[in-house]
Length: 155
Length: 155
Image 1: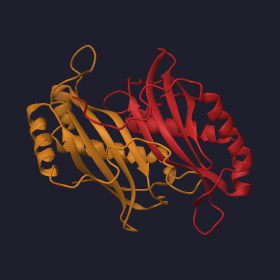
Image 2: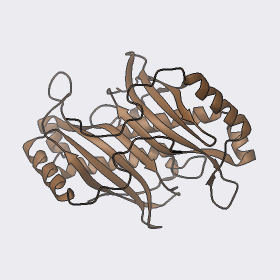
Image 3: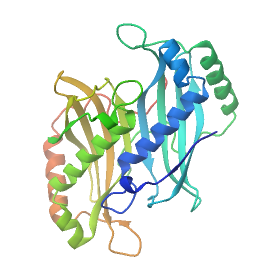
Image 4: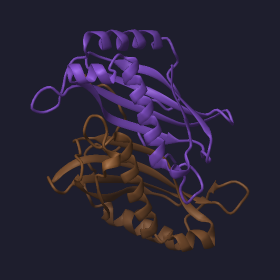
């Protein structure tokens, strides 16, 4: 599922002459913003219901360098979900060179900000239905290469 | 090992009223820049030798919200290293509230940019000696909670 189109901006390029790894995270986070809108949590709904989504964990792999001005497309596969969480696998492609530049596995949590402290809460019904439908639809896709892995020096 | 002091800047705060998850990655990446200097790969050395470091993977856990203006301190424990790689575990503390705000496990690779394409290369001798000394010194520390883990919905 396509989520975001971006361009590698001048202020994101580092001393190595490529997209600074910290800014891959910003691009992926903006794709998650698009995902959150896609499941019905638009700014208006977030404001009215005080429900939102927090990112709990991310695992990002930097596979290829991204140069200034590169056109980037981020897509999403839902790996699993439950009543208040969803685990997704994002891919960032450099569509100019048709290469996979990076992947990011992310765990997201439904949050109710209406109380004294933000707390984990079940999905709003509309969002939960979309998340469950995406999980069911994507359950038939092959597991992405690299999903579910930890980081190690492999010898 | 302390690496970086930062402050949660206004341009890093999102619609949830806290540090946007993408910018935790920028803070951690700046801490890695400090680590790279610490192992002798200063801008002058990088320029003269064409050796640098690329981040291959990151696994970040967002444990607590960080508010505008919060003072942040990033520290590093070396988990393992070999002749061209090092795996580190970074902690980001909000020193104003004395809480652990986030952790980031990262795998870094020594890179030679002198050829036609950047390629993995053994550490420069001086850097390799510092990396090995840190790994030996930190080998006696307990494994940080959350290191070496993959992401999943745990039921």
